[in-house]
Amino acid sequence: MIREPIRLQIQKWNNWLGHHPTLRRLQLIALLRSIGQGFAAVETSLYLRDLGWSGASIGGLFAAAGLFRTLIVTFTAEINALLGPKKYLLLYESLTAAAALMVILSSRTVPLCLAVIAAGFGMGHSGSGGPAAPIERRWLGAFSRKLTILFGKHALLGYAGMGLGAFIACLTPLLQIRLPNQEAYRLLFIVPAICAFAGGALILTIQGGARRRSAMGEESRLAASASAAPPPSVKSAISRRMSLLLAAGVIMLGFLILVARGSASFSLLSALMPVLLFLLLIALAMIRAAGSSPEEMAGMMNIVQTVAVTLTSTMSAYWFSERFRVSATEVGLVIALSYLLAGALSYVLIHASERMGPIKPVVSLQLAGAVCVLLLPLAPSFVTAASLYALCSMFNLGTRGTRYAVMMDEQPIRKQRSPSSRLASFLIRLGAILWPGAFGRMIDEGEHMLPFFLAAAVQLFSTWRFSKKEQTKAPLS
Image (cartoon, helix red, strand yellow):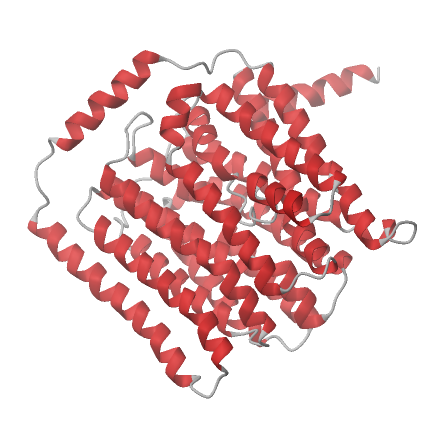
């Protein structure tokens, strides 16, 4: 009598995950990966701080990890064509498991740096899934036409997993009662190791996902047809000029901030130079992509929005620890709550997008998130700052599933991105690599407000561009 309700619950869970076994397994793999990401998002910077690393050093290591992830994401299509999605995801999970074991076994600088760079520990604040995400989303999209529902559930599972991982990171002070501080941090890295091993085991049970030569030929044909497309219209040229003016405005904002803070120390001004270079790279990317197709421009703005959200969340654990001198438990609870709220909002957006269309809810929530980002560094207490951080994470991250659904609804599953689109994407991601080091140095210099103002400026710009999409777009079915 007890087994029957359990079977019914399992059946309901399977029905909710998806109608196909591969779809269900891919969703569970994403959940497991997110648990490891959420744990590392809290634990990595605090562990490095406990080892005596400065904010600039931690940011520099995260920048190196970001560069490695950017290179992998840029050449995802080629790697996928060589290995197939199944082997690609299996390789990624294996690399993550090996990196976690390396952290457990050694606290020396070289192995620790290699592990953080290879696995991207501490870099998954946006919940995007890292280099595995593009292949995983394409694979998921092949099983359903209802992309808003599909990616809404995918985002919900991702944020639920990250919230659980952040809660696990809260156990660090309990272990530190019996173990030295560094040993407690290292021991808990068994969490991402177990999640990666379990994810790899699930991947091995999936049927299909092998490299297909026919698909590669189809992508080549699509790329050839794209290269024969007609030249950009006058409207595209106007859009290019508008993007140039807007990008120049963002850069001028950065220079105005520099002038306004002219009395700051030379070290702080030097820390801001990578930020200006980051703004310049975003400007170049937007100018480069302004004359591209609407679906490619939508993809670019999705990347910019993801980067803008990452600017706020990167090194957030370190910022809370330095600004308010709180423990890993308090930081972990705040970050865990923010991910759980983001997951709840992504689920609500599944139904809201069907009634109102996907554009209007996303724009409204992202604007609310930008306001919270502006207010966050002004918070006088930890409780106020924690509340604002949870809200801005909920508003910003909760729209991820809907944004991906919009992007993939406009861009066919097998349509290969043009060289212009790939170059623009690379420039944006390259610019984001500069951010952690600059953020860390500004915190070391006692500047706790300026990073958030810059992040909010980029976020407002990306939201404005996203709102320019057709407001009367029909709801996704």
